Length: 248
Image (cartoon, rainbow, N blue to C red; front, side):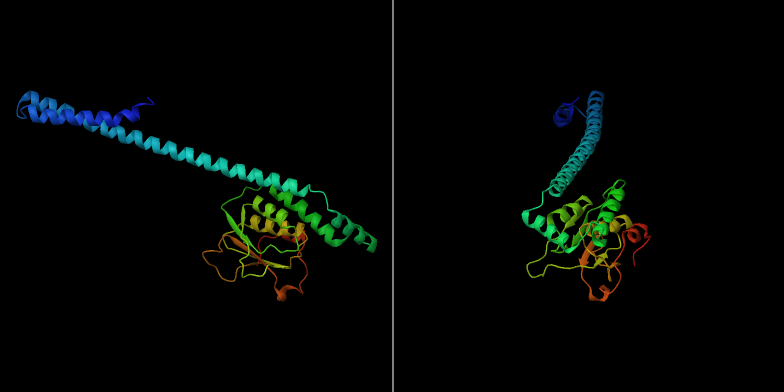
């Protein structure tokens, strides 16, 4: 049966040749001529219909196979990103980072510091949301500040399904950010996970707002920026983000 689809075109060709020969050499008004022509024509029609059915089945099977391959590729790259994130998070601190930590401790910093506690709470809340999260359609994000570990934050955002857009050469990278603008087609969970991902990296968010104007390019996108009008506001809390039913 596996070779049949490849034989069908030859069978059609042979039937067409046989029909042409019958039409040429048999008297069409005779009973034998009519019978042979009718049988060959019917066979030709049946084989043509069957060939179309087989071709349709092959195309459907090919489409399913291509979809499975694409799904496997997506899964593979997602696992590679997850592994890269784990490895990046396990990186031991450099001598400079260790020295900075000792310096802060010498100034009186404690692990109970509000900024540290907020980052840890954001990480825990993010992990809880991730347990039931399935990435949807691709999303775009831009504006990761230079004050965070670019590799870790980018991998964490890609884990959510984001495509991180780089800064253009004529753009000044954000050093400090305090607001997230999001597109109207983003799910509430996607927005929350984005905010928590930034907060666990130490970003002090003051607001989460929809884009002022919808465009074709920002419906499933997020822009991270600094806005002086929100700087005097209170910082967003982890509980406030997790419990929010809408961001306006």
